[in-house]
Amino acid sequence: MKSESTHTNVLGILLNGGQSRRMRTDKGMLSINGLTNVDRVHALLSRCQVTEVITSGQQANSIADLYPQGGPLSGILSVIVKKRPSAVMVVPIDMPLLTSGAINALINQGLAHQKACCYESYSLPVFIPVTDLLIDTITGEFESDRYQQDGKGPSFRYLMSKIGCHYLPAVDSQELINTNTPQEWDNAVKCLQQRT
Image (cartoon, rainbow, N blue to C red; front, side):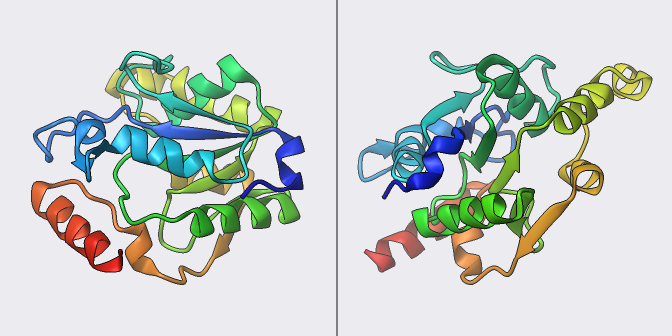
């Protein structure tokens, strides 16, 4: 359900840029009941308090990373630079149990506190207001000598230490299960089927 908060131009970002090494197949193309993860998560985000949903990654109809292999913050920065939203709600491709309620809670609290918002002990999903500090912090890390030498992008922990974050307790930690291996995926799908 949409709400008045959409006037703040909260852009939904679907992160689909990982290499899926441990899964051994493209996570975005894994399916449940005939729907791929890309389609499922896109639909999920579309039901939340966002104005638009954009996919970050190398696939068709996605926004490619400005800094290849730079991790999720490269994908987020690339979408922000291209679309210029006032805030973003970032969801990974591999959380099949995530609900719109969990996403909207982050948006509502993030807007209320006017700062980044995620669940305790979890980097994703995350709501992030777009500010000059955010853009300068991420860009500065990718332009740094360290990144040029080791090719490793900045972490969410580092970013949140710079911009500040409001943490919510995870009401249902199952919703935040991240699936990186075939076994984790199978277990999550079974859990999802039990819920329906």
